[in-house]
Length: 161
Image (cartoon, rainbow, N blue to C red; front, side, top):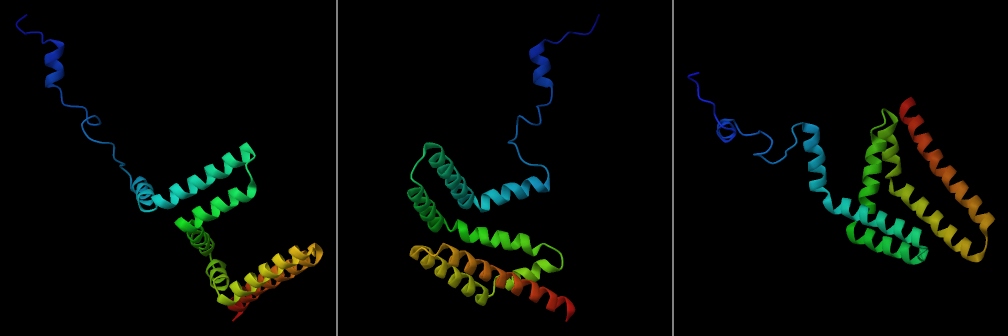
């Protein structure tokens, strides 16, 4: 036996280093990079939504006052502008629907559409304060029907014409 037997220490020193242990973990696929990029770009919104969710769940489980919880959610939402981003994301998802999606987004973002909806909410608020629940329910139903009719009419008009 002319060969020398190497000890365990010499074997481990001569073997190549482990690929995963000498460099930090990095995503290898493009999709993983997109997810990390999203969280890096929108970390304020993600943290705000998480904090609002935790606040609502904790206040619900502990029986905390609903008005105070709603006020805190409103303050957090206004400070971080998460509700504006939510509307943008929602319209982006609606816009992905083939053929009719972009048309729905065009109609919903019209100022006229916003004004009718806002007036309907204001009338409903004052009507509820006066105790006219049936009238408010029927007026909201009529306003919603009008707005849905505008959307359907616009889509049919664009498809036909």
